[in-house]
Amino acid sequence: MSSQVSMNIQTKSTLFSGIQPSGLLTIGGYIGALRNWVRLQHEYDCLFCIVDLHAITVRQDPKTFAERCLSFAAQYIALGIDPKTATIFLQSHVPAHTELTWLLNCHAYMGELSRMTQFKDKTQGKKEQTIGVGLFDYPVLMAADILLYQTKLVPVGADQKQHLELTRDLAVRMNHYYGQIFTVPEAFIPEVGARVMSLQEPTKKMSKSDENEGNYIALIETPDVIRKKIKRAVTDATMGITYEPDTRPGVANLLTILGALTDRAPTALAEQYADKGNAALKGDVADALIAFLEPFQARYHELMDNRDALYAILRRGAEQTRHRAEPTLRRVYGAMGFWQG
Ligand code: AQP
Image 1 (cartoon, helix red, strand yellow):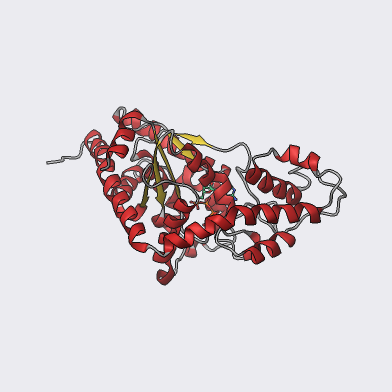
Image 2 (cartoon, rainbow, N blue to C red; image 1 turned 90 degrees about the horizontal axis):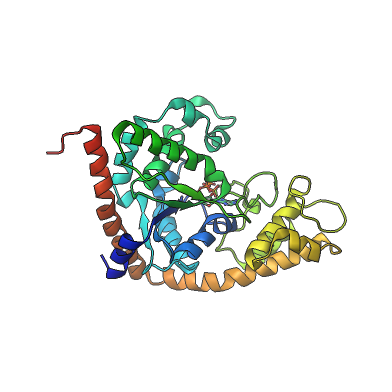
């Protein structure tokens, strides 16, 4: 373990967050979560995970899966995560995540998992015989990810708030039964951009696994594609620009994206664009996206061309987190009365 990392462990609270490699990383994931990882990385002892075990709750193509995981690591770094400061690792490289999941499973209730909005959304209209148990259990694995490291802070988008609450409930429940074994974590949800919406259906969240590619902007997309997608984004026929998420969700979403990229409040931007039309706003959103993504993409391609360095970062991350996860896992086994030899 490097001296920098061991110093962080001693002096800073732990921050954990992860993204599942279930599609291409989107601007929604960046604005809702990753942007805050970059901002908080020096203040906290940070663990940034590629939650590959979560991704298989829906079918993944084994041929492209490993490549996508590697590409996520490169994107984390290209977006500004410094692997010398923060630990970047793959969830499947640390078996303690699944081990703790089982222990938590035995304390989680069917009722509370059935109430999870993400589970309901992802299974809507599906026959029960086709719904994977993994999808149902997704939030317990997420709780294990977080609790394993005595995490204090979890930066996430608004859609993950409910899962975070379940994590807190499980931590409190286990602490009640077995004594103080877990830190009860807190969510960090940004004020602007906590819920970036789909471009074509702006009343639903932008998601990387959306079947309609027109609904999201992937971070590694070309300027041409970005411009086309923004041009086709659904808005409305009302004259002028206002920020009214309830009645004008498409326009509000474009203002949110532009606001996040230029560090301005969407309401202030709306005033600036009050007399302009959708075309002007869309042009500026596309320009801002391209200006932000071009240097990011150059760094990303450099990193993907130097795979040995990426492998080394992920191996080091795995080694450090395996070591860090062990004391909590042992403490939980001990508190539950398992004979540990
Ligand atoms: N549209 C969004 N707006 C704001 N935040 C978002 N996040 C994702 N989409 C948006 C946040 O980014 C992180 C991604 O976590 P994840 O990939 O593990 O889970 P997710 O929330 O299920 O993301 P997706 O893109 O919707 O993935 P799929 O399509 O595979 O389900 C989280 O912090 C999330 O809040």
